[in-house]
Length: 537
Picture 1 (cartoon, one colour):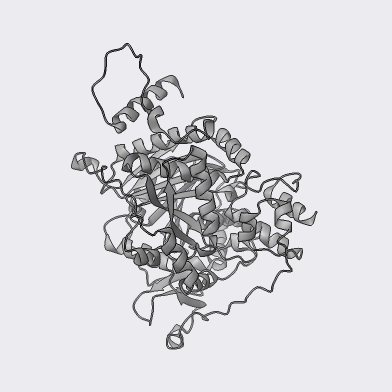
Picture 2 (cartoon, helix red, strand yellow):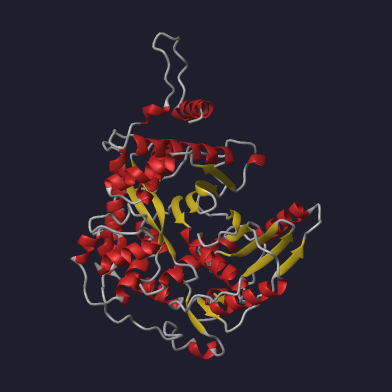
């Protein structure tokens, strides 16, 4: 009964039956952390892997143990003794994570680009109070060490992330009320921040900008991706709005270095090396070689295409996922792999899935930093039904859960190949308290040839954002990938048990009609999309 009560409270439902499925109730990796922490407070212990393998109260109850004391963390404990003397005056320091190093490398490799210079734009229905905003921002910067971080990439025995006791938090504030060029001013600021050159040695790798307008507040938060992930940004914005309204901030969360400690343990794990070597044996990373730069030079450059999910599709997907005991994410990832299969003409697809590596500690869901990793997933398409592709991907995620923190850079060194595509699913339900949020837009540039994001927010529902580095996939091709993805989602939702056969993408025609000239599958699909658009479905 206690475990069921924990589930009901965290998942926000009135009652949970002992055989109700965690994923059917809307569970995800962040809610897993919350359930585990809440259960621990009641003396009920389990590992996240136990919940993945036993996604019902009845099943999980068989795994319960008395919670063990959590391992404490002391500042500077991950830093070598030779480096500690030069770190006096700092709050903490720890080895830079492999992902942060990679993001910093790619952004410095192309200094004139906007690679990993992220900009998030929020439009709020909030009355403006400059003093309250400045005070709220000071409180948030003081509360979250990631905002007081810098990087020392060459002055120590290894690259370090440094946490300072203080950091610049001076916001940009512009009152645009009555300014007919308000939209132009906002757009120009976003453009400038996308190409801003950060001084990595100085704390404060971010800027908050407030644009005051007659009908509300435009808040633009720009930052280097090496310090924050998307969920952390959502945590920050919720905290900032709460502080602006005079509300208390959440209590302290685990130290940023706890994540790095877990990564170092993964790097030292022979089991992790064995797992990833075995999964990728004989595999080749999937590439869309047919998607070359076939458009005029003016059409090239980093591409981003947004694709809304049609009415009714999300509800059908959720229903199918619930009926099959699968996370919604598994169906979305299956559509990604099936799309790659279609355009790469490869039955064995190897792509990346961005995963959450937050430590399994109380209040880890409230941590603010960068806690992601991209792990390879391998999908065999031939001879399987649509839903079998999704089910196999879920089983693979479950089996590899213990090794999810083994860094992608280390995996790529093992196999001697690099991922060119990745999938990212983000459900920003943490934004639900922000009833004042009217609109939300993101500008991000990736070094992947293809990054497919599926994003769910309270204000926009669920949509796709197809990002490309622009060197292999153009904007029009990104749009084609998005439309394909949606068509395959319909197939997963409406015909899950049918064999994965792409012939449905070809337009139907009367057998007695004149034969059409031979065309390739991409052209056939283009026609099908146009036909569906014309029919409203």
